[in-house]
Image (cartoon, rainbow, N blue to C red; front, top):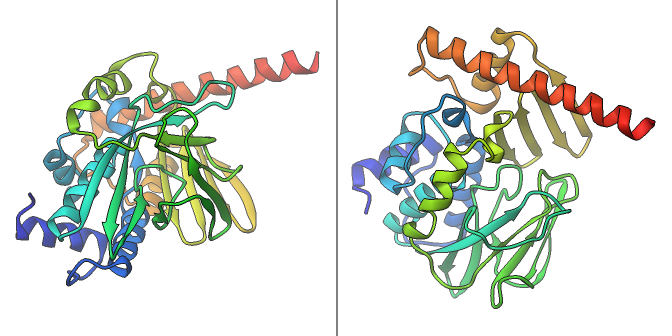
Amino acid sequence: MLTDSVVDLYLRRLGVARPGRPTVEGLFVLHRAHVERVPYETLEIQLGRPTTIEPADSVRRILAGRGGYCFHLNGAFAALLTALGYRVTWHVGGVQADPARPAGADANHLALTVECEGRRWFADTGLGDALHEPLPLGEGTYRQGPFTFGLGPSVVAPGGWRFSHDPRGSFPGMDFRQEPATQADFVERHTWLSTSPDSPFAGPSCALRRDAGGTDTLRGLVLARTGSAGRTETELLEPADWFAALADVFGLTLPELGRADRDRLWRKVHSAHLGWVAEQAVAARTISG
């Protein structure tokens, strides 16, 4: 359980006043603030500094101005909601990153449901470019800003649920099981995701942020904005521009990184980006001829 002083610091990080009793309105305010101010990011993995998924550690990380991926973001958010009196349940989920590969709740994602005012809600601050607000836990199609999402029964997790992303999203969907989960259910998968050379996080770095009008994404050296007006992309080939985008768009000023660490991070990100560009060129030549 978070102490009152830590809760106050967390709410200050989100720019939200301390709410009263748990309400759906309050849940939505907290969720919107979290995805707008606490980015999805994998920079620690690029630096070879694996993190824990202990919620208290994730909260400290967020209070220090950083983000994380689903285990950090949803773990910390669940701790905050619980401290504020909400009834939160962890669930084993699985993001389907590639439509050509089968879906499955394989513990590569931590999903949350919240009971409030007689209803259950699917709340997820760890899906990067997906939810801006919670969804009612029921079958349907939901519009949030320029994006349309689907929620319905999962065919791979009996009794569970399938979240379908907007076609412009970074992944097709995510399935999660109905039964409650614990931190232990995710430790093995987290270790693989954060340390294995075969992990998707071992490739180009990423930072994502969601707001009411769309999403900002920095994948490798490509900064993109996706919203109602379409998608724009800018390639950031200078380290000053790349670090400025992290700070200005995602709030990642990285004061804890000295010059040597910044140089090392830039070299890793730049090298991975060049490798990705080369792969795309080979793929384009293969298709054309």
